[in-house]
Figure (cartoon, rainbow, N blue to C red):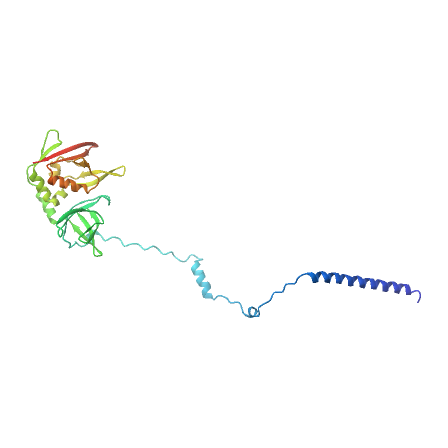
Length: 286
């Protein structure tokens, strides 16, 4: 018995030391863990009880269609304005107007010489101008399109113009040209007869504007009829009228100046370019 006493005593001491060591370890660990802050998150009971709402199938379908994931939606094509009505299908206007002549070309310079029976006047009209409540829409050779009360109507040169073509040039003695070929004596009666029948006068010649470096450079004469007053006055196809009495011609409105000059003046001088060379034609009216 005495033999085992030291052994038991040693075991008791070892056990006691181990217990104390473990106890000390837990105390240190507990003190460190207890110093760390603990954060608690409150959970709403209502949130935990409410089931998650899901979008119905129709909403998913609408989203797919709107986003066009499969490129099945064709883009809308812009509305196309209906083509203009052919001139042949446009009814003649009933307005008290007479078309005396037209000058075709770029819209800025095209014009129509129209007689207004109500106003008892004749004037040059451009595209967009109004006459007797109608708007001038289009100018063609021998005809114009008017927009009247929401519809298009056609104004053409009178039948008198066709009769005038068959009658030929105005009566009266032909202008006399001097030896230089630039000075003419014209009978006043012949000029008056020609100016009184504007319909015929405008069919004897074709006029179009000419440009140089983008600026107006006169009016070119074309298709002059062989026995017309213009031919007898020494004018030729291709002549470019650049001035009247030394005043430059800039657009077709200056034709009115020529008209008034021929009607009232005793002498008129035309500055022209022929074959690229400037020259003058001088007229005296007797």
